[in-house]
Image 1 (cartoon, rainbow, N blue to C red):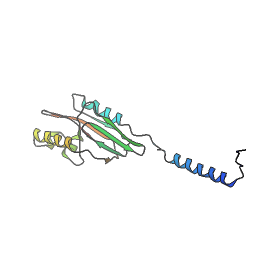
Image 2: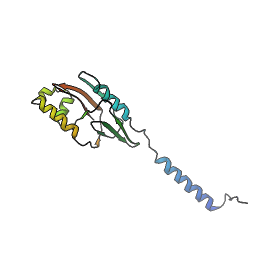
Image 3: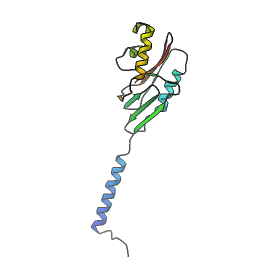
Image 4: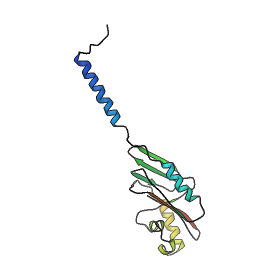
Amino acid sequence: MFDVPLDAWYSWIGLALAGVALLGVVSSLPTTPPPDANAVANTVDRLAAGDHVATAEHPLDASAVKLGPHRVSLRNDAGTVHAAYAFGPVTPVADGSALQRVLYGQPPSTVFESERAFHQAVVEARTREPTWETVDRTLVVRRVSWGETDVTLVDA
């Protein structure tokens, strides 16, 4: 009584529209998983909790990163995730800065004129507002100590 005959044109159009809608939903699903911000924070925490000078790297599965002194945010096509550091604050390093040269291996005493200048650069880096930066490499973390300043430098 309420049966729709399959030879009716409107039933085929409705079926086609449902198929197109289903195809649209399936194609909008992300093809990759969201990045793992907790693994990045754990790498940073391992060095920040230590007492010795050390360096670590962590490969990133994100297209953009926002590094702050208390948390890290990662973003890719699947979404944005955040994780807090347990042993913060850490020092995010700006590209081209003197702290970046220290992060990649130069001793602070050869880059900065004094311990005070090193400490001031750390304070300025920690108070800078975090911004999204594109990522094409791994996250690099280095724990450095000079005089009274013990710091964990982070760059991506």
